[in-house]
Amino acid sequence: MPIGRLFIANRGEIAYRIGRAARAMGIETVQAFSKADADSLPVRHADHARLIGPPQAAKSYLAIPALIEAAKDAGADAVHPGYGFLAENAAFAEAVEEAGMIFVGPSPATIRLMGDKASARAAAKAAGVPTVPGSPGRLEDLEAARAAAETIGYPVMIKAAAGGGGRGIRIVKDETELATQFPLAHAEAKAAFGDGGLYLEAFITNARHVEVQILGDGERAIHLFERECSLQRRRQKVWEEAPASCLDAPTRAALCASAVALAERVAYRGAGTLEYLYDATRQAFYFIEMNTRIQVEHPVSEMITGVDLVQAMIEIAGGGRLELQQSDVKLKGHAIEVRLNAEDPARGFLPSPGTITRLIVPEGQGIRFDSHLFEGYTIPPFYDSLLGKLIVHGDDRAAALRRLEAALAGLVIEGVPTTRGLHAALLAAPDVRGGRFDTGYLERWLAAEPSRLAAATEEAIQ
Image 1 (cartoon, rainbow, N blue to C red):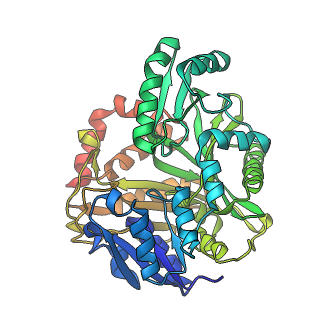
Image 2: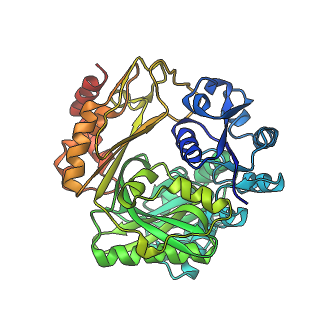
């Protein structure tokens, strides 16, 4: 059924982004908010708002009963989970549907299947998609892990079956480290995800992180090309590009086709992302996991294709079919997104909540700033430190880099330290400008250039 009133079960920049997309479609919005977010931009701009609990996420944005009650009380037809929080929680999707509302995303069964990294690997293999050599499924104990590691070959990664966002990963180089780290990884996974399940994957050195954006209606799927997300710190992405400059045309075609094949095999509905590691030496790609939600970095895919992913997933959730054919999706130019966080790079990226005293957002052709900031906004200390995303588009990568440089120079966020200086410093790095980096590059660069980074950070917050 068409959606008339949408409940947004999230906060921050993605809540504001969803609200803008829905209102442009003529859909009323209901914004969930904790007490810490009562004066936030998403609440200010929503048609309606509902308090769901105290500032702590466990008692508000992660509280399924409170969210369902608020959505029903507001008369919502559907619930959009955004990213993070409960976005990939099958129990939440089930609760929404059991309450008679539409979950804007894949079915609970698909979330459950692809949310478990071990079962997702099995689904990928069944679809003929290459996977990183690893254990055939969950590992119940250390002995099973030892046997799997011997078959795979060291070094290996211990990964949480229910993990995500780069969390719950440990790299071990031999059997001694495996014996030490396996029980610690189990305890960490249990505490972080409520599921201590683990599996092993081969560790590919100098790998690049490439992901494919897909859209599906439960029967048919298409891709919106790929993004590269190799610039990471502690496996958290900080800079994303589309398309990936490391791929040639045949590899890009094979990669994207594999993503569509897997999405169709699992009857995927909505927007989703399939993540891969790319081994440039062998020119081979390997599926690692699927994110069954909208991604933080979705704007770069929108910029190179002209497709509004949030509107598309709302239309599909409301019973629409996927009208786009693959031939309709054209790759236009190059886009780059950098994440701006309330963190101080000069002090070990210490989170820095506080009040925004001055904000100047760059404008112009090919520049986009997705954020929930305004002057006078006080950043609460309870949530992720993401302030917004600066996205630029150019005819090619060189043009996008020039536009990013100008946009960063024009962006002013005062009152708290931010990672603007980090991106300004990265832009000056020859390897970054030349596209010569892998998933370990940023941490090596940070270790080698502490003085330059500190100087850039000081300049950024003056």
